[in-house]
Image 1 (cartoon, one colour):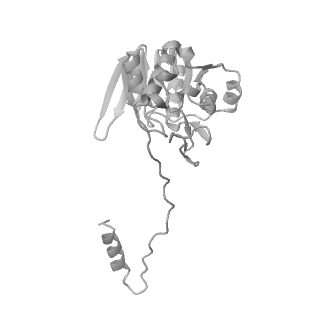
Image 2 (cartoon, rainbow, N blue to C red):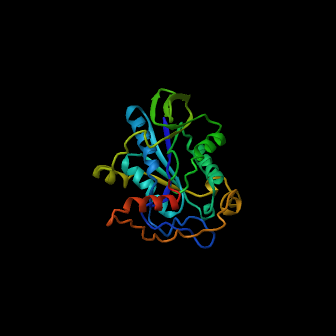
Length: 260
């Protein structure tokens, strides 16, 4: 079985994230970045399936040069190979264009099982798995909190607010997993050293038979028209109780601010 994990390089949530002034797109090259935490669950799912049977895990990412770090982390965790789609024309692509690029790469890789995380920490749309499955003409089982692969059948348990449901499909298939699916492993020293020898290919749009006009900001269906920095945090209101009026002062504050 050939498993391909679609992993995304995202700005570090603990760092100073910002937008590019030229076009209001997320600055991915000038900030610290890493493999999306939500995609680590997808990598772990693929590795678990691999260890339970005969499979090969390839990690696919789309992004700037720094996105190679997402592939590197996945290889250190235990993936077998990596593919990085790198092209300046990709900058500014929205979910529609991203799904097009991924679907072309996945078709070239001839994946049996495609694994996604439940979303990305920088976008949060969570629609790319469904878009990719539609483009590839494959079934999709999404948001799995428990995944079982038995031969050609993939079965997931999807947990909702009031009930859980079991969904299954037959390979080839697109799968996405939630952050409840497993506990991603940490790269071991052996894994870190082994990753240095694993193959990583870099593909351009031309390698996928795509043109710059099909992707990028100029073809995006959405656009960020304005960005405003979050205002600095101000000091809060302190209600004292030196003369026994603290309770009344607190009630007045909550009432005035419509917290009651």
